[in-house]
Length: 192
Image 1 (tube, rainbow, N blue to C red):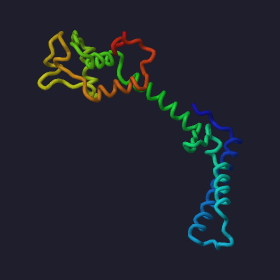
Image 2 (image 1 turned 90 degrees about the horizontal axis):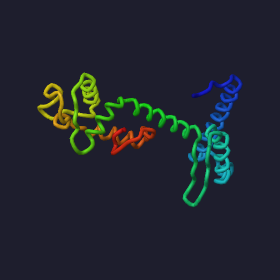
Image 3 (image 1 turned 60 degrees about the horizontal axis):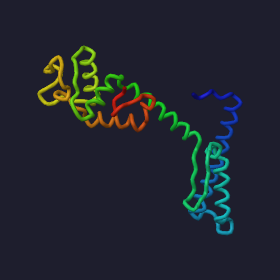
Image 4 (image 1 turned 60 degrees about the vertical axis):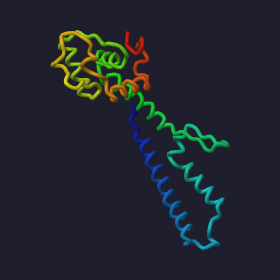
């Protein structure tokens, strides 16, 4: 959760942005003028000065204040920005929540059983029918041609009527990748 800034922090932040923006505009204008030859040779700043000026601009930027890691090695320069890392963590948490509650536990169980080898024995009920309709509406399952809910007997093998789609398999794989069900014990991919 983002906490509101105090008015003093907001004022300092606004001034910092204005100063940084001003320095950036002046710096870019100078570099463009130098590149276009608008500055005479004797008035030009050398490459060392340009590098120093660039470092000063970066050091004064808000990005530098959010820098979590900066490393220079033979493999190159590595840096990580704190806000981006935190935002990614938040995004993953939100995705895990969405994936966990996108389907209910019974719908998830149906998908998992349809994805496993062997029969999937069922007993028809209004809830079961609603769960199948929801999974089909999401595109996670589809009925076998000429078969479907209306042709299903009160009990039998669901795989005689429905199959898991590529989207359904992808959903299960994404749940596993995001470790959505890490706290749920599973046996052969089926919650126990």
